[in-house]
Structure formats: C-alpha cells, structure tokens
Image 1: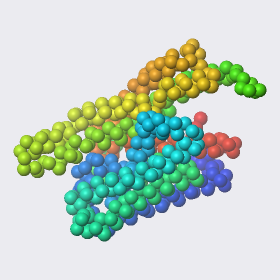
Image 2: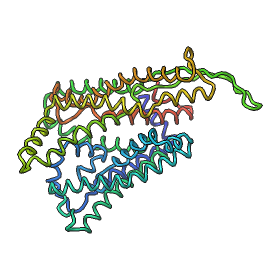
Image 3: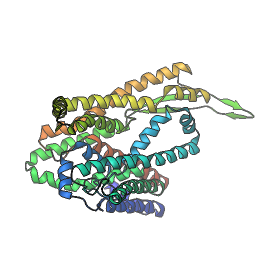
Length: 427
C-alpha cells in the first residue's frame, strides 16, 4: 500500500509526472513499431525458424519481439549494445580514446557520438546476416541480387529501425525516467510475458508445480537483487592540502566495488560465442564431402547435449566476467587518481601498494559475481528440469535485465521523490 501511495505522490509533481508520461509514451511508440512487419514475410515459416534457432531467440530478446514478427525494428537495439561494448573495450586499448574518456562531459559526449556512428555499419552488417539467413530459410524470398530494390529497402529499413530505437532510448534517458536503452529492452521482455504465461497455463495443469515455480522465482529475484546491489566499500581518507592561496580540508569517502560490475554483458558474450559453432556447422550438415558432413553433424549433436552445453555456458560466463571486469576496472588508474588528490586507503601505502590491494579485492569479489552470473545463466535449464515447466524460462539474460531496470528506475524515482520531501519506495 505504501508503494502505491508513493507512486500516486509521484504524479502530483508536474515535472515528475511529465517524465513518467513521456517514458510511457515512448514505450507505446516502440511497441507500435515492433508490430509493423516487413512486406513479403512468410510468417508461418518464420515461426518455425525461430523455434529451431536459439541465436535468433536471443536476438529477439533485444528486439522486444520485433524479430519474431520480422518487423521494421527487428534488429532492436542489439547493434547499439554491440557498439557500446566495442567502445568500452577500445577505451582501454587505444590511448587516444582512453585520454578522451577522462576529459569529463566533453569526452563522454564524443565517445557517445562515436558509438552512434559505429552503430550504423553494425546495423547494416547484422541486417545483411539476418536477411540472408531468412532468405535461405524461405522467410524473405524477395531478398537477394535478383531484386535489388527490395534488398536495399529491407536493409535500409533494418538500419533505420535500430537508429530510431536508439533515438527513442536517448530521449527517454534525457526527458524520461531510467536508462532509455535498458527501458526499451525491459519493455520488450515484459511485452512478451502475457503470451508466455498463457502458453504455460495451457500446457501445465499441475498447480503445485506452478506454485513451486513461483516460490523459486521469488527466491531467484531476491538473490539477484542482493547480489546486484552488493558492494565492497573501500574507505579512502583525504588529507588537508594547499593549492595556491586556498586550503582544502580533508575528509573521508569510499570506493564502491560492486560484486557484479559486469552486468549481463558476460552472458551475452558467452551465449553468442557458444551458439556460433553449431550455427556454422548447420550449414554443412548436408555437404557432399563425407568428413565435413560427419564433422558438422557431430558438432551439432554435441552442442545439443544439455550437460555439455550448460557446462561450457557456465565456464564461458565465469571467464568473460573476469575478462570484462579487468577491462572496465583498472586498479593502477584508480590508485593514481587517489594519490593525485592526496588520498590514501588507511593502512595501505599510496601508489603501487594501493593498486595491488585493489586488484586483490576486485579479484575476490569478482569470483562471487562470476559464479553468480554462471548460475543465473544455466538456471533456465535447471529450473525447467526441476519443475517440468519449459515454456516459462526463469533465469538468464531476461530476468537480470528486468530486475536491474526495475531497481535502477526505482532508485531514480526515489531520488526525485526525496527531493520533494516525499517518502520513497526504498527503506
């Protein structure tokens, strides 16, 4: 009841009400675009193709169901996400970009601009890949060199759809509530939930099983929130210092090191790489070369083995979590910044000892975060085998995104409400 009262109070502040309504309006536009299909699509064949292809099901997650209908926003924001990941990795490997990322607001704006530019060729490349696959599967028979006008139109539509969603996401971030790109992905996942629930109720008639599934779901959500919000706070003490004619007083603060600082990116990396061998092998299962046909058939069969697939999935998620954390958190840079501003960690000497201490702490908490992500990644299979409910998948990328977006949006709403002397959601 208190949450309902707080939500009602948020509509009493005109500017906050406008932000909420603007966000809802942009989501309505997104859902409308996701239901506008490309012309010439064989929808019956499309459904069969999606049911047999796990990679396209993953891409459909980020398109908010747009790929399942092969709509004008079929690629979703996936090219933009890939561009953001690439830019994040390049920031740590290219000195010019690394210097630019440290130039405050100007540097962030330039990197965001580069990310938008990189999104265009990535959208085009992904659009070509999806269109060629759909053409070979009989879903888009008009695509190909035999019909250049239709081919150019389809690729331009795919690219423009991603750019429109990217623009909508930036509008939500600027004028609405929450991170726009995350909110769009969240809306797509939630938008598919009623249909999934209906399919589950049609297939599963054992209410005790559904009750067990719901209890496990509540526990999983609670665990995700606990881990996602978990952090190790490293205390930092600043001494008094004099600059010119001014004296700056010292103080104390902390460095929040999150248990899961990588988010869902390791899961995205892992599943993309894990599905690649079987996807390539499927193209050669009908080859006339005996050894190539046998190798392809064996590869497809191996990756269809649940134990092998989930074991590799778990290992890759753990490895990518360490890999991404190492790229995004550089102890030497943090230690240099602390030393530059006259700070130190109590009991640790500034400089190299501080960097080594931060490196040890990050490695320890990343172990917990990596194991957590690995368990969440394989959880759909584990829970499905335990309860027998296969139509409603509990875990993986979807639930991490949904829970993360809800928590972050509540935090932003909480901050807005606290500024207006209202009681917020979070205690």
